[in-house]
Image 1 (tube, rainbow, N blue to C red):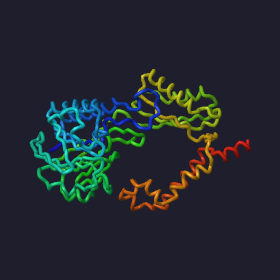
Image 2 (image 1 turned 60 degrees about the vertical axis):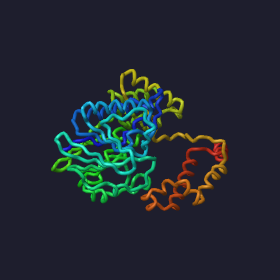
Image 3 (image 1 turned 90 degrees about the vertical axis):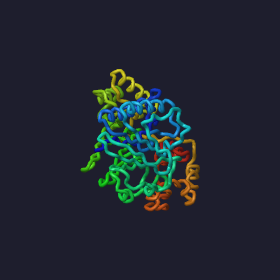
Image 4 (image 1 turned 120 degrees about the horizontal axis):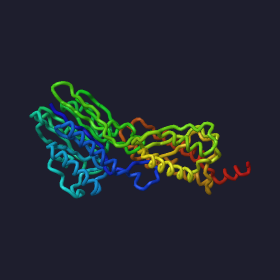
Length: 404
C-alpha cells in the first residue's frame, strides 16, 4: 500500500487580489500563506504518509522572497525529521533557476530540475517500491507536449507528476488518452486551480489550489490524501486553507438614515470567522441620495474593520457593494463624444483588434470556437455601451444641464 499527499499551486508569496481594505499589509496577508503550508505539513505528519507531492507553482514567482524560502525550508525539515520525502516540480510561475535560492533544499526534498522527464525511486513504509516521473519548467512557458517522454512502468506503483493544461499551447499540453496509455497508477496534475478529476481509471487529478487568493477561488477543497493498493485507488480532499472568501447580503428596505443602516450591517456579524467578505447592500432606495459616496464608503470600511477587531472577530470586509441603485451616479468627464469615438477607431480595424487579443487567439480551444469578427463587434458594442452608461461626455453633459 502507498499513501501520499498530492498538492499543487500553493502560490506562496502571492497577495490576495481585489481587496479594498484599509489597514496596511492586509492585502498581502503573508501569515495566511505560511499557515497553509504549515497545515499541509501537519496533515502529512498526522497521516504518516509515505511522501508528499508538490506538482508545480509552489511559489508564486521564480524569485521567492528570502522570508518565504526560509519558512518553506523550515517546514520541509519538519518532514525530514520524520523521514518523509518530498517530490517537487516547478511550474510556469516558479520555473526553476538554481541561482534564485538562498538556501540548500533539505535532503528529503527531491527536485525535478529539468524540462526533460526524470524519475525518482523509493520504498514505502510497507516496503513496496514506487517510481515518480516528472519534469519542471525552466521558463514561464513550455509548449512541448511531455507525456510521450514519460517512461513505461518501472515499479509496483508508478506515478506521473504533470504541471500542464489540455489544449494549451503554452503550458505542456496533454491528452487523457496519452496518459492512460502509460498504464501508471496515478497522475498528479497541477496548474488548474479548480479541483477536477479527468479520469478515474487511472486517477488523473487536479487537486486545485489549497488557498484561494482571489474572489473567484471560493471553492478550494484543499489537498488530496491518496491511497494506492491492490484495490480501487482512494483519494480524499483535506481542507488546509486558512481563510475563505464569502459574500453576504444586507437588506436596507425601509431604512431611511445611515445610523440604522450601520446597525443593520453590523448585525450581520455574530461570531468570529476566518473570512474575506463582500457585503452587498440591497433595497437602498429609502436612504438619502448619494448616501454612500466613495469617501464615505472608505470611512465605513475603516469603521467596520475597527469594530470587528474590537470584538476579536477575524472577518475582513474587502468590499461594500450597493445593488440595484436607482440614483444617477454617472461621472462627468471633461472630454467630448468625438474623443470617445476616436478612442475606438483603431480597434475597428480587424488587424489591430487581433493584435490586442493575440494571447487569447493562441489558445487552441478558444481559437477554434471563436469568430473574431463577431467577438470584435460584441466587445466594441459593449465597451461603448458601458462608457455611455457610466460617464457624461462633454456634449451630452451640456444637454443634460439644459434639461435641468
